[in-house]
Image 1 (tube, rainbow, N blue to C red):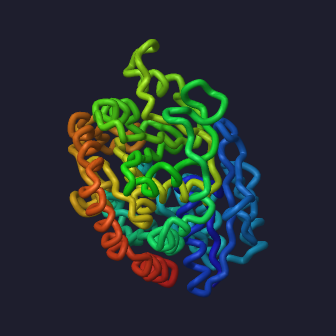
Image 2: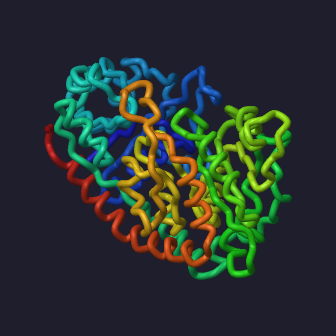
Length: 413
């Protein structure tokens, strides 16, 4: 079958999902073609489509604009001849409906934090089928009257293989093992407290490589675009309250958004406060391979969230055998099992996501701080890392492959 994929195409969750779906469909014997949506012109990286590293792939067409004109959709479809096209978080219902009316099957998916009742009818016109990746996503669709098949997301094989190489010994991480450690508490790059650079130092002298020699304990906070879903103030406050001097927190963002606010949070909320030099901020948008090496070399992932779409970093952490601390709310608690592959802390109601109105939750700060101290215990951390390796077997990619095969192989629902 010839299958089109319309999605972002750079190092962000939606695009990573699209790239992994593409690899899986290729493995099933389908021919795949990507129409890459560039970022909005108002984005901090406007008009962005990546063409390097893992993103340098054949049959990828960069669209002219984030809002792709209907004529461009039709011209692309005429050129590649897809039997069906998969869309992710695409609200161009009229344009997609035209494509569907031309005889191309259309299958869409939306994160539950954005999709609301006003989108139901236009989405039904545009798509033959709307699928889900999480149970919470599927349940919300059901509340809106949409019968949504679920593709159970899992641990992508290349991440599992990377983890197994790492478990074979220090050489398993390849280039990461040779990178030097940064000065304690230093921000990367030219900024005083919050600008960023590379991912040096997360394997040698820090993290798991130093675990047996009484070295530091590195926690990675995947900050992404530092959006409202990330409870930065609560996370930093909880970490500052954990006194263990071995602890280090790396706030890994992809942009310099909220730089001044984060710098102030690191000083305890005061412009002139005492900075916690155990906290480091990296804002460089690292190449995928470098970011994953940094992730794999961390001792734990500190990932509370006010809400999540898929929570891709939770699957990445589990695939890499890295324990996770997050709050006990969906979809986070669909991936992380308390005491197995991480620690769950209570979520405190904190309003609603701005678009869909789903509940938002902030992590309970004292409980989050206690969990940070708990995971600093070498025995607890080792037990949770073992649990992560067991959990990744439960979240196998074989399930994802079977669900994807059923999704694209069935007729319109």
